[in-house]
Image (cartoon, helix red, strand yellow):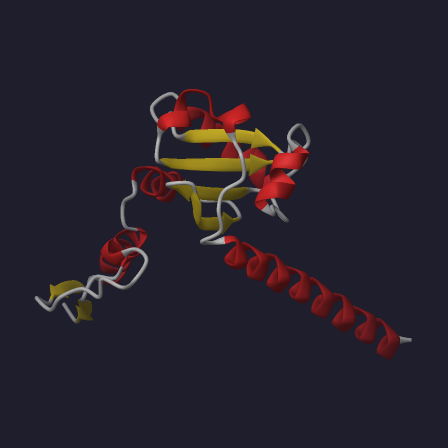
Length: 174
């Protein structure tokens, strides 16, 4: 009996891990694709080249934790568009949303990034304003570990999709 229970738990764990991998793979595949028609939900952000769509579900726990942060940021960031997947299911399907909460960054009519899961306010503001998330991570590591960041003067690789996010920095012991 115990062996059967362990086998069931292992199979269930593998199924959950496979579903998560499939969700992240699907989000990665959406990057670079043309964004679907969003005129019905864009409102005042219709003319902005950079828009972030926040897909949420009312019964989703992480969404309930993140929605107050989104509501707080929306008045100062008109390019943050909040979409309930139950009310806009065709749009969520067109974007390929497979999990909530999801944030989709659209730049110049193309899907630039898809973020799945809850996000801190600092990272959300960075995504909205186009700041470098790697810089935020670097600063967090520096503060947490007491590292100094040694900047190098070599040129950035401009073939990368977001050149600002690939700084040439090396952590050095303080």
